[in-house]
Image 1 (cartoon, rainbow, N blue to C red):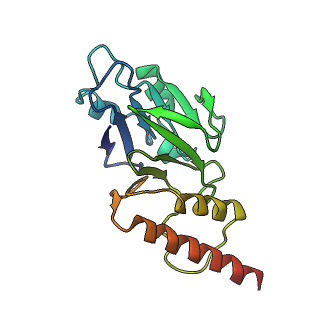
Image 2 (image 1 turned 180 degrees about the vertical axis):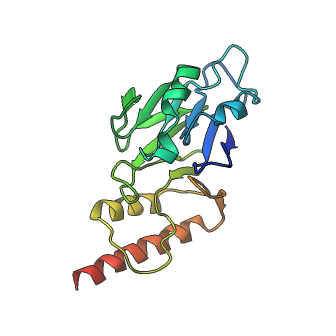
Image 3 (image 1 turned 90 degrees about the vertical axis):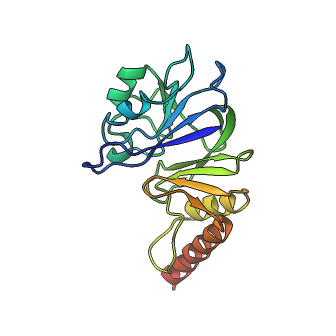
Length: 201
């Protein structure tokens, strides 16, 4: 599997987009774009990448949540590559609504959809057990202090992530997180739980 980070237009506020390809660009691989960004500026980056002979550059688009900096370019991207668009909720341009626990082929690997309703009600992460990676969108996985308000569903999602073997996180706005990922998620879980306890006193 190959992961290519796309930066989009640096002059606009946008997210990190990730193009995920199979290791050998085989015909059966599902070239997948995770988040499109604010507009269609990632198209020029994708056009420079070898995405496989006889293949569309993007077969499917997965949106981690509906916020504009992640989904604003859906219409333009879909018009360009005719890809299927998947997200956790239905909004303009979405062809398939995803479910928590569902598995998807991305590149040449299987990924699990994990609903993590902390940043928004429709936020998802994408976890590949084989590669030990997680695409986290804007899910708040770096809660380093106690405070704030978190739902039980968010706590449940963090506990599920704790059971996953994750070596690398590809977030929506920062550089990839490598090393001590489990410790990071554990700290986030503990602080979120403590915040709930404080809120109940």
